[in-house]
Amino acid sequence: MRWPAEAIWEAVAPTLPGFTVELLPQIDSTNTELMRRARAGQCEPVLLVAEEQTAGRGRLGRQWSSGTSVGDSLTFSLGLPLQVADWSGLSLAVGVSVASSLHPALQLKWPNDVCLHGRKLAGILIETASVGATRFAVIGVGVNIAPRDALGLATAPAWLQELLPGIDAPQTLLRLAAPLVQAVLQFEAQGFAPFMDAFQARDALAGRGVTLSDGTAGEARGVDGSGALLVHTSAGLKKISSSEVSVRPTN
Image (cartoon, rainbow, N blue to C red):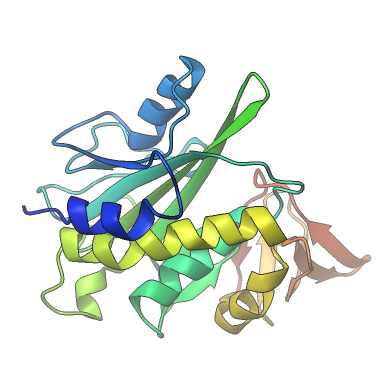
């Protein structure tokens, strides 16, 4: 595959000094690799792209498969040092950027899934490492490009070629990379507030019955200014801010 590394570098480097684009044929996980580097003191801004991941990870320790063939999915991680006053809502801001760059039909499921008609098309995993006085953020994105096997999944996955026939992983990366960097830098400067309306417009859970991982049931009522999920329960309005909480639609 021909990757648009130079075009992405030219679009991003002026606003992110020291930025590089790195392409690998195979790695265990782009997030894992950038976290390793950060802990070793390598904190320069980088976009790391892997044609194949052998141990991709999702939220709550779940596995993320890159598919059976190279090109079935796009897997990459953006790593950069950030000075953020409040990290709440970063995954939602990233989701807004990803969905906006790809297609108007895509929705967002709190806190980190990009969905098409209730089926997961892309996932986001954010990790951070403290390196001296620096906080290094690693923002991992996985996008299903081609048809995916639903084996072992409760809900069949979606893929981008359903919406954009013929699109491939390099073309998808070119759509995503520069806007994602801009979104992250805007979040660093302004927090979640500038992204709130765009998230609400794509909120896949709004008005739906949900069950939390602790068994609590209620109705999703959007998010607040910090990106916390609002759930109306029998005990009143509950704010869900922990990424360790799983939310499952019930209708």
